[in-house]
Length: 340
Image (cartoon, rainbow, N blue to C red; front, side):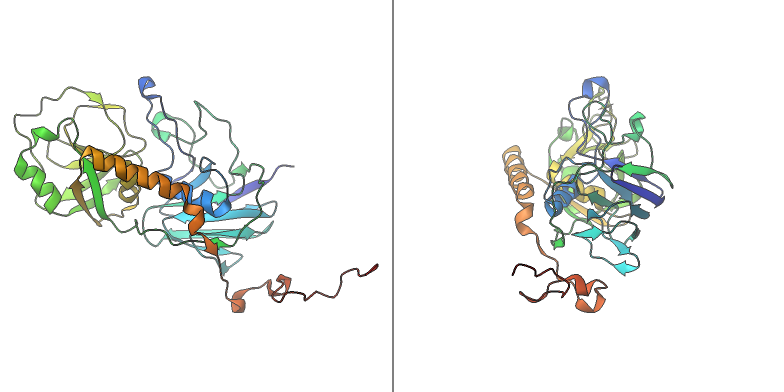
């Protein structure tokens, strides 16, 4: 029998996600994949496995889970309260989930999207090169109570690792590059975009995030006669009332609204994780700086494993304390010493 994870209780917006489907814009299909791709890399670092493994994405609220075999897990992304059989476990860390134990994940305490990773990743039939759900395109479904997920073969063994992620769960600074219509916005509007705070509105999902500028909507010179063309995640479209929308991983592939700028891919996880009402501040960078920032971020992601450290557990709350060899040379007393 294969290793399986049962969903005893599913949150309202729970899907399986990987790095998405690149290269299908001509088919009208955006990349999709995890809303916070950095969280995938963090989970991979904690479990010592590739970052393209399928993980479980939880929007705002988790659920209850149970595995039929001892399983390595990691918890990343928006921090959520989590317990194993009632015992609190650390977020941004890897743990053993014993067979039959109940993993409970509650509401996010910051950010929007939390991730549950398992050793070997979840196993699912790929479609167009990926197994992630893309609900806007009708690919995959929301996970429900009673669903059972097959897990891939785990070739690793290390667990009890933890790291401190950069805070991307409360808003903050976001860098932009100019887009094809940036020049249509006057200098005063572009200066205002960079000087004033924008707050994440309540309207947000995997397709886009609405923003509310402190000084009202942005307006362009010369009308809004923009021909529909290809759009990508990170593009900031400005609608007829002047309100900006940041396109996210399940966005449409073409659009006719003018784009005031484009969020750098390395900063898109911050936008995805910004909770309603939190403040974002934008700053334009030139193409050369953008390329250097992306290279630096790619290098940092590749080296995330170097920043993991052993998880120090408090002995007062270790139910399995006697199973640990705390002093070198100490034995349990039931070993077979024949032949020594």
